[in-house]
Image (cartoon, rainbow, N blue to C red):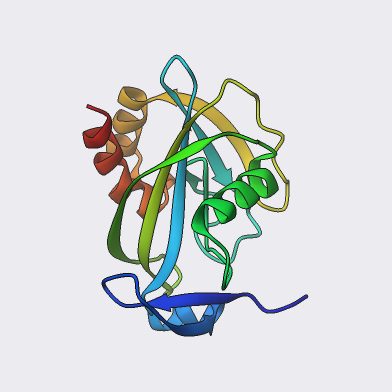
Length: 171
C-alpha cells in the first residue's frame, strides 16, 4: 500500500510541502484536513465510532467523517471521497468555516490541523466501512454536549474542539 502523504500548510493554509502521515502526527506539523458533520432533517448528528484498528483515537466517537485531501485534490472532492469510503454515504455538503487546532492525543501523537469544516443534511442510513468505523448513531446536539460533559474520554479531541464552533455557526 502506498504511503499516505499529508499536505503541510502555514497558518494561512498555504502549502508548504508534504510529509508522511505518521511523521506528521509524531512531530505535530500543521497540515490540511477536513471535518464533516451530517445532520438528519430532525437535526440529529450522525456520529461514528472509530475502528479499534485506527493508529490514534481508536474506538472513540467522532463527527460523521474526517480526512485529509490528497495533493492536487480539491477539498470538496476529498470530502465526497471520504464520506463514501468511511460511511458509504453520498450527500451534498457546504463549507462553513476553517480553523486551526492543536491537540495532544492519548498515545503521544499530536493533531495539528488547518481544519475545513463542512455540513450536510441526509436521512440516508450509513453503510460504514468496518476498517474505518466500529459503530454509528444519530444524536441530538443537546444529548451530545451532555454526554461529552459526562464522558469526555469517549470522544475525539477534535470533535470536542470543533463542536462548539459548529453549534455557534448553526445558532
